[in-house]
Structure formats: C-alpha cells, structure tokens
Image 1 (cartoon, rainbow, N blue to C red):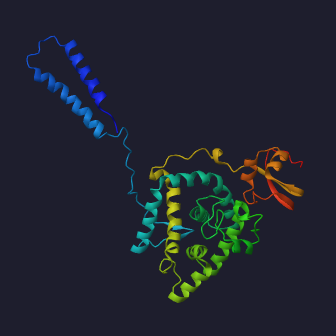
Image 2 (image 1 turned 120 degrees about the vertical axis):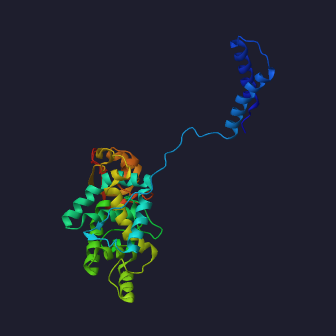
Image 3 (image 1 turned 30 degrees about the vertical axis):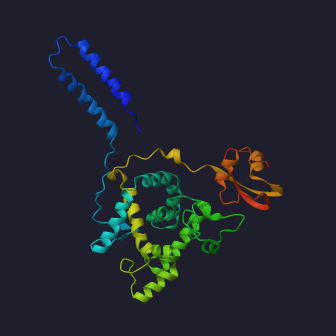
Length: 326
C-alpha cells in the first residue's frame, strides 16, 4: 500500500513556503490559506486512490468487412447462403483480430511460402493450398498435435509411413518441411481425385477420407457447404478461407509492412551421408564439423537428440559454411 503521509507533509510545507515567499499582501482570512492547501492535497489523495493510467491503448477495430466475393482454390464460396456467410465471417473476425498470431504467420510465410508456392506450381495445384499449411501448424515445422500429427502439414505416423517417410524412435522425417511438403501435396491430389472438389478434399484432409465418404453417403450430399460434419471439420475450410483473406489483405486490415524477407530466409544447409563406427554424441559431431550443438540440432530436428549416432547411414544436414571431413 502507498504511504501518502510524507507526501502530504512535503506538499503542505511546499505550498506554505511558496505562498508566504511569493505573497506581497497580508493574509486577511486564514481560512483562505487552509482552503488553498486542502484542494491540492485532495487532488493528490484522489490520484493515489484512483490512479489514471499513464498510457491508454488504442482500441482495435473489430468491424472489418469481408469482400463481397471469396474464392478458394478457384472455387467461389456460396456467400449468398446466410449460414455460409455467417460461418466465414466468424472465422474472419477471429483471425483478423488475433493480431499477434497474424504477424507471426506473416513472418513465417516469408520463410516457407516460397518453398510451398514453388512446389504447388510444379505440381499444377492451386496456390491457395499454402493456406492449409497455416491452418494446420501455423507454419511451425516441429509442432505436434495431441493426436500425434506432426510437421507443417500435420501428418499422423501411419499416413507418413504410407507415403514413404521414416517415423520411428530414431528419426521422424515429418519435421522436415521439404519431404513432408511433397507427400502433403501427393495426399491432397489423391483426395481431390477421389472427391472431385477441393473443399471436400480439404475436409477429408482434416477428418479423414473414410469419415467424409461415410458422411456423404449417409446424408446423400456431395456439397461441403451443406454437409453436417464434426465441428472442427465444419470450421476447417472456412478457417483456411479466412486466413487467405487476412494474409492477402493485411494492409487493408491495419497490419504494417512485413520485415525484409532476408531476415526470415530458410537456413542454408548441405546434406552429407554419414556412417558412425562408434556411438557419437551430437556435441561431438558439432565439434567435428566445425559448428555448435544448437545450430546442428536446429537443422536436424527429425533425428533423436538423446540417442548417440551409431551405424547408419544417416543423412545429416550441416550448416552451409562448415567443414565436412568427419
């Protein structure tokens, strides 16, 4: 608790001193002096009891409007349906006002979108699929879900192994953006061929193809916007569309320019196939190749850090400017 008596005493003495020093007229009514002292003391007391904030945060605008038409993967969302419009607007409002998260998306996009866009173009797939990766992982390559899905595209172990990735106690290739990107696009392409529609393909990516196929059969519908699905899946495509709106229209929604791309370049690395006759700790390997433990681990999150490297072959990622004689 703030002790105000010394402050009142000091203020009292100061006011009396200044008043007597500067006044050239005699004091006719002593009560006037008392009143002059009490008023500033009351003001100080009030400030101590109910302090005013030194800085007031500007209120964030929350009523940004969506475009009249929204397209995702070349398909127009049927916003003329009230339910569709309301659900998209909800996801849009949640996204555009989660400003810290949007800023992180924009910075990570500088690192990963060029890689994803190049792969999408080479595969002849819609560029909008890059926003699915944002919805899945916030563009965090090593993040894992409670259900065991890992990586930018959030693959569960079984699906990853089905497409040829190694997932065991020694390594988990789902944490590497490049190989996971390739199988992510393969899987999305297969879903698009099966369901004939990108919105259904994305829903199947979230809920599983068997779940979507069964729901379509039970409800006699082939339109994502009309299907009754689990809550997470019903929100899923809307959320991807909302992420696209916010990231593509960021300046319209009060976001500043992004940092220079050079600050968020992917780390340069080279790969080397290595065999280890004796168990080798990561700290030892870092010394051998002329780098530090942390840099080496950041490039190789897919390899178990607690286990010494033994046997092989291992494909190790090394910083671009390191020696490779080891």
